[in-house]
Amino acid sequence: MTWTGDGMNLTEAATGAETPMATQLVTTSVRNLSSLVAFLLSFGALRNWLKLLVFGSGVESIRRLLLYLYYTIPEYFWVTANFPEDDDAYGKLFLAPETRLMSGTDWMMVWLSKHSAWAKARQVEISTRSFGSEEMVSVTVPGEETDGALSLLSSRKIAYLPAGKRTFSTWYHGRYMLITRLQEQTGRRGAREEILRISILARSHRVLNELVLQAKKQYMAALQERISIWVSDSRNNWDCVTSRPKRSLKSIILDPGVAELLVDDARDFLSSRRWYAARGIPFRRGYLLYGAPGTGKTSIITSIAGELELDIYIIQLSRSGMDDAALSTLISDLPEKCIALIEDIDAAFTTNLNRDEPSPATASPEDADPDDPAHAGTSGTTGRLSLSGLLNALDGIAAQEGRLLYATTNKYEALDPALSRPGRMDIHVEFKRASRHQAERLFFVFYLPPGEDGGEGTKNKEKENESEAAKLRRARRRAPPLPRGRVVELAKRFAAAIPEREVSVAELQGFLMGYKGRPVEAVDAVGQWLVDEQEARAKREGVEEVERMNGV
View (cartoon, rainbow, N blue to C red):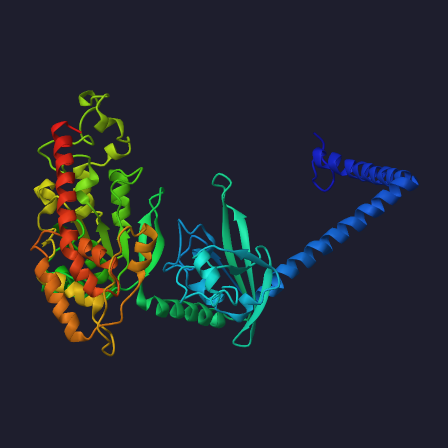
């Protein structure tokens, strides 16, 4: 190793000697690259392609910038809201009327249907789809309401709907508004979901909030005189199938005190949440209405729903696909304040809903006789619903609180005591066949004149060999209204002719429907009608007894 005068070692001296050489190599490489570029640019075609590449890149960058600004800048001036059809804010008016009609989810579409711009759309669809209550939606074709012939030919009215995938404009509180019906692929087996899109020219959500609240208030105000009926679909979702006008309690002909007992108890329950919570009692109430068919069990439930302003959710235990898990899901998804209705709870299984005798739903497949007709028509889905699953759904951990549960049955003795015990069914009310008091009240409902007294009714004499068509025309004629005193007299005669607790109110109503406006004829004909009913009932009971003996 050698040393330089300034103390630098030999390696450092060698490095210093290599620096000019490295610089020379870099300079040579740059010159070669410049020569290569100059050589390539000497070709005119390549030079043109490079110009196009630079120009195209610039144009694409500008296009993307403009597109970004096009979608971004309006967001500062427009407020847009989407209402999917399966959301609570969207009106399911455009779906099949068999599956979805007017419900608590329709308020936005109801508001739009009443807007003048809706009926003035230039591109429309002509539809006969049901729009629920005529009092809530007014989109029918002008003139149809007054055309009696059209009203008789079809109960479905023609409606204008703005065409799909089209945008129409209107004004709301001085703000420009765009409304569009869209359809998007949902991915579920090609199903398409309809979306209502509303865009308002505004900087804040204030106008949108006003629109949504106004639409909801308008709809809820219209619902004050109606109740919604809900049922479950195959996916265990609750769907509103119809809405009905409220029915007055006075129109339900029951024994004295029955309607008042049910309404007062339900109203007291709904106002006692804190009382239940303070004592650790589950906030649930169950009612078991039992008795002969046609005695008013379902009618009083509908009337109570209207009186308390509650919707009715029908739980169909015999629905295809219903099992323990589905039932638990449906009951747990019930809203806090509603009426849950299980009609004919004794028919949930093909035999008695009792633990003493196993039903086909709980019997093992080995015990089933394949040649037995009772098993031949039983679907496999019914067998998955068990009594224990029903009991757990009614008052288990996942059971919803705040709801009123009503169950009806024609066979009270067939129910398992565990199902009808307090905590599941707190109040049991028997609905008997009609008493003479009920028959008299029903007669008043049909024939008591609403206004001034009229002349005494006349009775048409039947002619011998009268044709069926002539009898029908005669039955449809109505006599002049009778004075109140005359109606009271006829009502007492009618009630005296009715045997106590032998016919139902529904049967009496069906009889009186054939004599609308003709009370005198109704009183004269009730005796023969009772004889015919007794003979028909005896024949039915005989057939049922034979079927029971034969094991059918």
